[in-house]
Image (cartoon, rainbow, N blue to C red; front, side, top):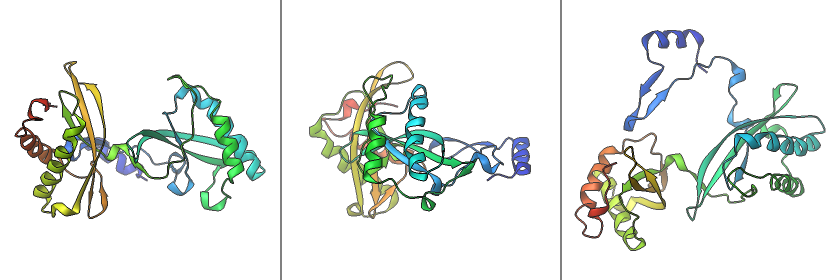
Length: 252
């Protein structure tokens, strides 16, 4: 929680917004009320096959409320958070929706209330499955447990879609680049390329974004908290020396 006086000082100094590693803008929230933040031990989650649209929140909220009010024997209020993109083991995207419960304006901690049993979970899943997304189709609850937050990925950009036969070469060069940059033995670095999708650059040209996840010594590495621009520069140089790939590298 940020003290209001500290926020005032930071505002005066112009330090509420600062540039972190990799050139990412970071903002200190002007938050000094305990009611505006919720501890993670109070958060419940649903994993969905598509992001929750704002227009569908009014249909999700009563479905969740109905199930939990039945479980707790009291009327509950449901506060919905954002739906964040995650990646399943085989690379398919899903969205984790966070929500918390209140009774008489008091937020309920998850360890203080019973969990939903299989029948109650099924009831909630079925109600959610009746909601139509503006993207088309109905929502579905996903049971996959092994998920990675998409925001942790590292990007590489190409001017064309990368052929599957070249993925192994690219993966090996990524491992070598990180090994050279960090001094880690290449055998301790694991790379998983999960997806590639077509995007537009600032000039409206088509580029292909390759997303990969990194582990060092078996532990996930978060792209948001480690400098990787120099690794990407080295990696582009190495890849440009491979005949099958050099013409595909983008300047993004």
